[in-house]
Length: 599
Image (cartoon, rainbow, N blue to C red; front, side):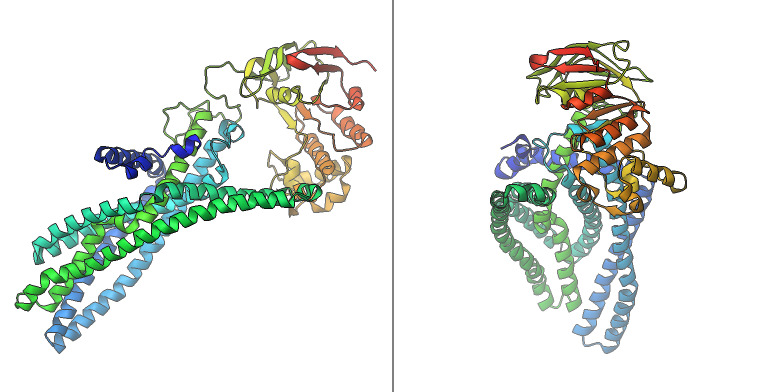
């Protein structure tokens, strides 16, 4: 079992342990964690404060309507019990008026609640995306520690905001109703209030004992469902490769295994929910009978009329419901706690990888300085490569590059001064020696090691497998700048597509397609060169960026690049030599050889 599954903030131990001290400690941790994630929205968003204030007012109005309903119902049943026709007509009229006024209040109340839920989700998701993308945390996040970050951002945040709002309103509504209906109940039969307290305490304890397994089961449910969905997405994304291999049987078995985890977990949940539902049904039905049993002798003796009996029953059910939040919503609360722990572990992982935030920073806090364009450097006791972005200088000073786990040295004590590499550099070597890793270090993606990298601030990286963003062909060409000024750029875009041999795509600039599926790998590499030409960087890093095109196309693409940009390439082909001035050959054990290229 991995560290995250063990990290329930003591909640699982609370349920399985009978110690009161452990239960109180765990409850405090959960409340503290909940407040840390919930309060920033109300503190920082002016719109959120306004929406929440209106929500509180509508909650008060809605509770007032419920109380008025209680008294209208009492008068209605009093007249009915006394066979008072005129009183019955007045009671019916009063009840109808309250119903007409109360219906729109309830509708507006529900509408405002949904509006607040949407606004809260929007704010929290944007904040999460900002924390996830700044300092390149998304690149450093290890899915072996934090699984399915996409689900946590899209679904877990949604579940948190929706249920948090429901929980906040429920607590507020319960407090108001508890005070109001307790007064009514005490005025009728004070002893019933003590009965409710005892009834709710016993009910909550039994519910926790029966349903305690739901918290870990819900935690695993979220993970197993996400893993199963991810495996289906991978099957779709790699359909062609799987088809070439004939790997249907292996993929099917993998899907079956993940599905069985989902099914087994669901069956365990069903059994626990069945047992819990038996008790909660009994608990609910008993709350209808108990108040009548206590008030009935007074009614039989003539001390109460029928309306008082119905009002006492209504007040008892309401107060019991207010005292019994855990009993009524235990299944929902257990699922919410599981999602809360998954979400908090994600935020903790994000914070731990962001070099601009301390380990004690609040989970949703922003940094004081903008580090979105600087590489994230995990805090640890080892040294790291320093990246200095300059106007035009490219140099490597005493550079040592290590694997992320620091178990292997890929490049050792490499120094290349600016005066040594005034032209373009080609990095060569056997597969696996660390050519792409060195390029990642120059780009600022890998930081494990020591030394200094100096490179121009306006740089662009072309990986061997180009990235196609979601959107139109125009957006592919302009990525990552996002500038879409059609009037200025259309002619230039068309000309650039023709230059790289993609003239057949010039009529599809505004077509929104899955371009990673529409284009072959060779076409994607040509598209990446078009992107590079349009961006006009001062410096480019190319990781086997022409591996999927023929040598004639390679000559054309590098010819375009030679006219505009200085670059460093990684490659195996001898045909690449003529586009570069220097060669850096990487050997085993971090050895490097630097030579000039003469043709």
